[in-house]
Length: 282
Image 1: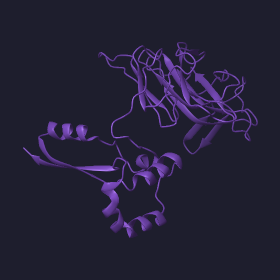
Image 2: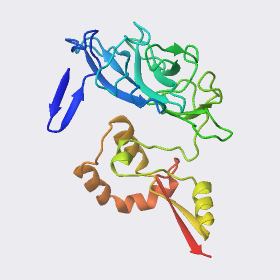
Image 3: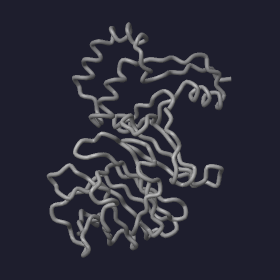
Image 4: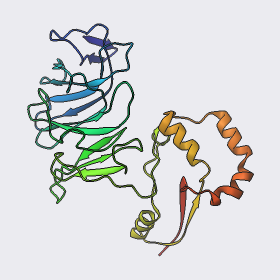
């Protein structure tokens, strides 16, 4: 199925064997990767719904050998299993990887990840991590070290608090086959859709911010913690509700209670939303 809008042409990926639209199904949250050794080869993953009225989803996948002009949808990774949040990537040799979140159905009682690999451009996939072997959790993402350094072929995964075995980050040192026990990330990052919409790059720990400032010639006099009070609302809006803006009523209420926040902020038991470093140029 081909769609055109002005100068843009869109080629449908989740198609039948004849390249036609599959009536009644649905797909979303696609993630695409390109073979760097042959730019005509791409692999894509998505959440596959066989019925537009159902919330049961599987790990859809497809591939192309002609730069996306035509696509083959060989079927889901594991028929009959609830899967979500697909992430694909390619290493520098053109091997594709597919990180897939697995859970139970109809009630999600666990959130664990599997790693799959394709050495033939996405035509077939093999489970290399074993069942739930990548550990991980919900809203996962991963990247591959493609440098020539000591971490070559290492894979790094991050995920949120709804996870398989605690922590927020883990890695594989053997190209996705085995994964280390997840660890927490310093300063409990709460990145979400609000941060993306506002162009935030990262949240710094005290140690990291001090190190970066000293590296460019500053002597750090003091690091101040503030804005603890906004952390719960920021988490709910950006991580759970997936909002990209704060409502006017939220801002108005916050502004009207600034006098109160100033008095209680430093006494709140959770980490701050922000830190400020005061430095002197050496």
